[in-house]
Image (tube, rainbow, N blue to C red; front, side, top):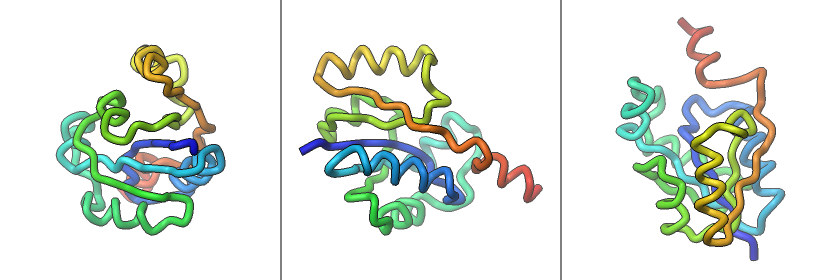
Length: 134
């Protein structure tokens, strides 16, 4: 059984989020999703999500392609591996080649987990939605 894992804010849920989750689920037997808490998001984006974390995690849990979703309060992917012992972590290919993800690839490979980069949906993002609203 292949356990997949991905993380995200999933604020203002849109087609890019759905594409990532459906694509991830097609490559594993079980997909676990870590949804970033409001506090975690504020710590690096310096703004709170529009949709509160307890609602965002319920939205993600309701999707057919998601087997389980939990709130997470750390961006540390190895902490995620310790908690969920996944075989694959999925991330958008906009992160490919970035130093932080090269480091995660190395660290996770030491425990037999691999990083799979999935196509990023260029035409849609939460940031773009917020910019249009403003």
